Length: 414
Image 1: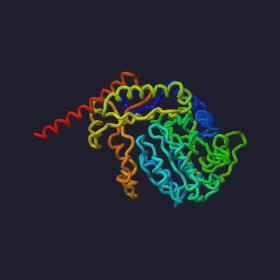
Image 2 (image 1 turned 90 degrees about the vertical axis):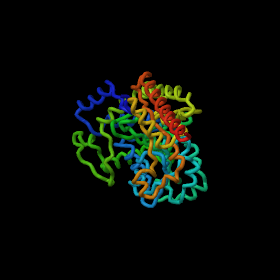
Image 3 (image 1 turned 30 degrees about the vertical axis):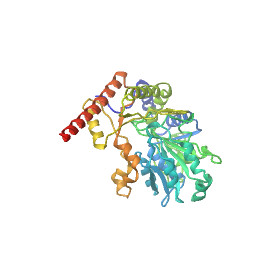
């Protein structure tokens, strides 16, 4: 059985984690700080904060920006639920907009959705393919749009416009116009969940790229304090001789990443660009080379001038089918011992959002993409023979469906 997305664990990772276990210090400390430094360097930013999940990272940043009850945050309808739930957790309203053919947020739909209540836009680099950040920035910097902006916090007054947050849960290692994702939006939040390109089992990273006059070092220090219950000293600092005294100066959150998890991500990050990312591209390219020969296959975007995917997902689309037929193909693939997935069920189709009044009929592009999308397994451990097993399973399952449809049509004619 070919699994869908197992974590990459090798001896270097085991040694890194074992070293933390033997150090006598498990929670937030030196390893977490080192992960922050190395991630910031990788993303070409000065400061990055490690937290316990990407969801926490988005909540923390929205809270820092002063987004609260009565405010609106624009999000794509085609994303994982956490993008919108983070908005709801700070009391604001997610304003969903449709997506383009590349699965990413539609800039024209963003423009139409902006109101005087809009405080932020959360773009999502679906499957690791970067959004049109130049297009998004041109919208928020437009004078007509800036005149609509009604700042209600010090950070909002300082920025003077709608904040752009990149939900880059899929996109560590991707490039937009020759810039690494992490340095393309005001704030970028990565996920280090177990199925991501780099994992800490659970975790997230906030990359800070706020423009002047913001001091990203000061913002980092504030966020770090807020992520530790507003406490002036973290637990590691308090263990030093005579350093037990501390204060709590803000009603913060418990969102910190522990060292024992940071160690997993550190070991992976150090071989990511020159090994793991290359292997993901190998798998991606294998699928595209084989499947692009079939007129029913729509292969995902992965490269254009200055833009490169992180190869997190391989969202294959099958032409000429509906949702039920897509599900039959998935069953056929599973019957050939290959696990696949669907990314994602659009937000308006999920109970929590449907009951809040969102309707999938308002997002036709999102539904069309969802109805014929199948995510193929993509990770470094897959051999070329494994890749062939996957493509063979897909091709055979599609042909099996087409044959069944042809028989049904012939019977109906008779």
